[in-house]
Image 1 (tube, helix red, strand yellow):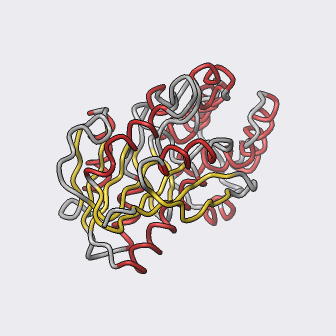
Image 2: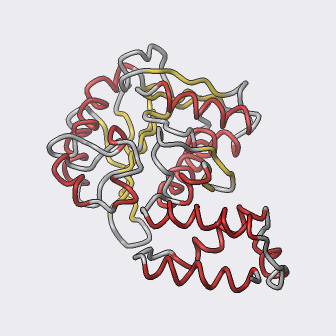
Length: 282
């Protein structure tokens, strides 16, 4: 069998199995198995495949047909110009979350911020992407999961950012004692009874602790807001990812803690996705 024939076969099998990203996934699977980039995949379309390689691909297809994401199968995910190690212990980084990095970079440039903290850091994709772009900055990543923290530390080491990043096991701000110019979080925000409605790719392979935002989906925002004034510097800012219908409620939560809404950012689908606030602390 030729590589081009196998690619078509994978695409067809995945499509019939209800995988919407069938063509993309087929290319990713073959690139990973053969260690090709996109260009090499095209140039080697006439490559004759061994039975061992075909068997290896078939095992991957079986896992993907069970709706396991290709990122979890291969243990890595691209995010904001870097590749991050991931596992079943961390949320699979989403493309829309890359906007947090852009917003943070603009704030850092505008305000001359020197430090920030990332709450619910997971794989460390947000904190490390920002540090990579801002060479004079230091930051702390916080997560309640020691397994997630270990993944973030691995990514920090792989990206040579160990000297400017540190990681802390904490339930939100409970074990945080320093103060910061910028506080960032993409917390769990799915209401508990809506978890069952999520796609199998998400509900079966992302950790529940990274998805479940409590009965109303707002529990984590309330916990963060409750203690945030203790750890934010004068004129400090906050960047939060939210569920598409949560802007009004999250704005109320933070305005009640003396924060001023700066802007609501929409995602690629035109849905409210990121809120930014500034502390009124003087």
